[in-house]
Image (tube, rainbow, N blue to C red; front, top):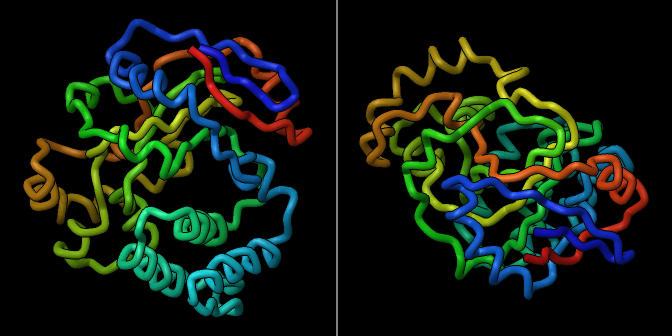
Length: 266
């Protein structure tokens, strides 16, 4: 498989003979005929190139398009309760349109307030992939890993909601009904294509002990609701690796110079 850019350059993706690839390759066969709707904020350099105020202004702009008035001062104060409130507006009103996705993505960009260049890049067909999304084959759970190497190509959790860890970290209500409603396991397979630009341990900088102390109160009831045996922090943070690229430097160069991906080719 190849990743094609708008300057005619390309990067070869060497796929593995594994269950993850067998599950996603049919999706990519269809998606190779569809342009990647690559947004400027999909570029890992995006937050490092903009002030926090300008990012909040973008959130307010996307809110205005949906007749939502954003309290800019509360956003700038990193008021997590407020971010949770506007996230609930998204949950209750999302109708599959790009406008809602733009709004949602900027909620998370702003609440994280991370000026660093991201160590991964995600190619997401968003609403264009909708008809291809399917229930995940739960046999894939045994292949989840939290350790990825530079150049690894993988897919990851991509649900309408939050992981239990994110739910806890964001200070959402300690209410099992709300936890079951908003916090989700990896339930659907979405063909997002991700590439690591450096070696990463996805459990780094996670408050493992604090989360596990909270999670043991709710895990059993939550797992029963979602009809799964267990869902540990390793599962929540895990990804499915199905390939590699051998030219990470070209990928970094293209992104630094705003050379955008346009399609994949099988």
